[in-house]
Image (cartoon, rainbow, N blue to C red):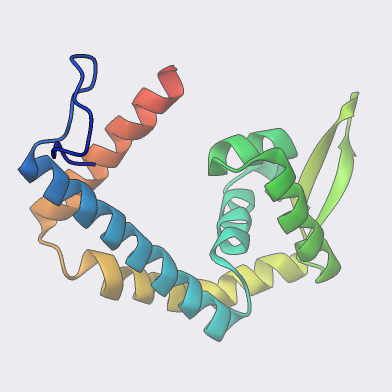
Length: 161
């Protein structure tokens, strides 16, 4: 929203200036392009969504390829219900399995199966190439580092609240 005659201006609202508005819109457009292109690549080449791929990556990096569902949801910044729906679809395809947490009957773990690991290994080269083509290669090293630092600052600010 810009500060035009039809938009109320209050002393409480810190409106974006023209340059900030340009950067904000570029971020929205760019992030939508990156997400859509990576999603399309994974669907076409690996038959999985970007969310499913990220779940497999997180599980592959965890001890015994297992995480609590709540940890997984928090790490991916997904709602519990969205994660549950995605994991259910992945279970149907044999990529993951859910099981009760040992020693905590209320918790549920998500475990990547051998089939899930094979699917991740098969999908990773194409996905990494797409990440390079879509995001890394168009930027200079300085721009890519600045993007990473900026998003880390956003994440840290979100976690502190």
